[in-house]
Length: 366
Image (cartoon, rainbow, N blue to C red; front, side, top):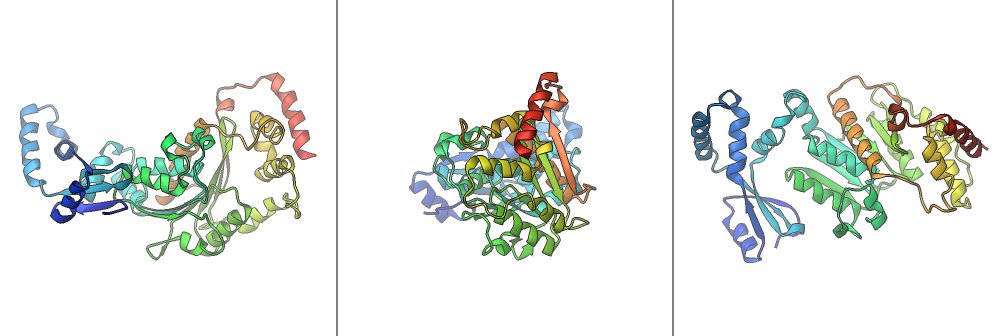
């Protein structure tokens, strides 16, 4: 039996028979996909029902051999799909021309690397949802816990599963023609060179969403060496902090090293409250949301770990996927910090919050 995703030709009767003999469930809505292909290619006859029906019959005859059987072993399913190019054409048909054909091709044909799969998983999902990079390297050493399910879009059946595996499965369910490479030990000095390569070529973009400081550093060192653009997004209450580093253009790694000067040299004996202070100052305390500062100030007291909410993680996914698409299409997107705050946009905070904010700023800066 096959133990991983496989796309099987309709000609491979032996393998298909093996799946059937092992009680794999088959789902076949191939004709529906061919109908959609016909509709996407013939918008001018949309209102002519008879002509459209006739055209659909022609398409069914013409494309009857464009079947690919996509076997998903983790679901015990085999789904009949259009062949890759036709599948992608139909799957992205409703993007036109919000994303032009050329932009879609640039988005699809690139390779990216995503390290850290809490926020990173949402960026990957939205990228694939919009017909993004076919080649994706993903890295995370953790497994999914119940508390992760407030921001990672997975069900209870994923608890205890490696984050890399859980994400790869969901991405393949969206697009079985992806090329995903999993790094389930995270990113480190030993594997970073492999992580920034896919099929022997350097990736076009790095998404950095890791907590581990050495990993943050080594990713930037390699991004700088190979001139790969990199960005990271930090949860910030009901908003996000976006840092774009165009190592392919003008960004210097020394600018990142300057941020590291805020981190004490002796970190091993720090208590969790001190670590929370260090991390907040590393991010940039003046840019951190008031509610976020309030919550972080109580980490190690009545809050166990760094607070995050699902809506913010999804917002980060939407923004992150937008950044990926723009950079891969060589749009002007400058290095720098960008703040997106729902509380600011909707003017949630009042005068009473200003006093609390000043108290919190004093706490973190002292």
